[in-house]
Amino acid sequence: MAEGMITRFGRMLRDKELSCTELTEKYLTQIEQANGDLNAYVKVTPEEALKTAKAVDEKIAKGEELSALEGIPMTLKDNISTKGIETTCCSKILEGYKPIYNATVWETLRNSNAVLLGKTNMDEFAMGSSSETSYFGGSANPHDITRVAGGSSGGVASAVGGNIAVYGLGSDTGGSIRQPASFCGIVGLKPTYGAVSRFGLIAYASSFDQIGPITTTVEDAAIVYDAISGYDKMDSTSRGRVGDPTVNSLKNDIKGMKIGIADEYLDGVNDDVRALIEKACAVYESLGAQIVRFKLPSLKYALPVYYILACAEASSNLGRYDGIRYGYRTSSYNDINEMVCKTRSEGFGAEVQRRILLGTYVLSAGYYDAYYKKAQNLRGSIVNAFKAAFESCDVILAPTVPMTAFKKGSAVSDPIQTYLTDICTVPVNIAGLPGVSIPCGFDKDNMPVGMQLIGNTFCESTILNAAWQYENAAGADVFRQSAYGVKL
Image (cartoon, rainbow, N blue to C red):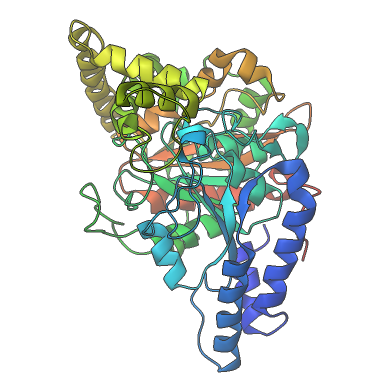
């Protein structure tokens, strides 16, 4: 497998093979050419990008050392707060909103002279699995623009998979980094809950949300994760990265590693996806790993538990959008109650309204014990089931999604389909575990298939090393660049 793009471009900048300004201009030009097809970006920030690129070039001219991510063009999902730059969660209700502070992850990258190309498309308030609930329309899959890029971080995946960003940061509440990474044939890492600060991430479901990188290679994912992980006093749930930088452990031998496969993860999976998962097992066995088959019966509760709890938290978190303090406000009303009601009815899309209503219902008197409390108890049993599983294996291998990217419009006409794409990813969020999706081949329609490696809490180095070993053993068979974007 070729070196990561971050490493490659960093070396080219240091060796003065091209300037940061030249690199940035190439990406901005390609965004202008490709975004009409991909709809990956909802806001491009050329002034911000070129200003940073100029600063990096001045450092290079002075002979100063560059950090790993310095001068590398990247993007942010539109629910990550950027001071003075419009951040809308791709919702009408936040149209025109410009945060007065930066999210911690962006402040960290900004201080490292990361080149922000713009903000990328997403499902409205991260609620969806196709990016089609976005107020700005859905993102296209760079391998076939008649298909979705996935969601909710579909814009980031479309941009990275379409070579109009080197890497990006997304958020993963129930699979929103890993699922679009799988659909677009790239790498997506959902870190352990608390490893990366959520300060400045506009919340969907606070006990599930986690920021993480979307990249083209495992090495790049490790570099970005190492940069953004760390304790943050501004986030009460923050713990930071545990152990040494993950990039240092990528070439460790995995001979004797126990890789678990739960039978339940393969239920209802498309034949093409199942065949590629089994093929990946053979690759791991050739590397000296041991495949351990086991059962995880509590997985059958994961999807209902996730949607009850996540919608309940969404109902609470989205109560702040009332048209009074910021964002969209309805144009005509007689009193404040009508103003709030009309603002929320007009400002939120159908999927967001659906989830708010569901969340409010399960929290209401008479239904709290029957739904919310029961779901919380089942969440505990799922956490315990994973703890037991990791007593017999080091990592768990599973499909990322049961299918490949579907055609545009099908999820809008059949919302249940989008919920079912989450069936393999939500258990990780329920248990707060790390998971990485990596490409493992293509289906009969030449669309990318992803598999995920799940680790115990704060074992990012273990899953990234296992992912890197597979990526290098499988080589070109599992990765294919799209026709779009920058080619250097």
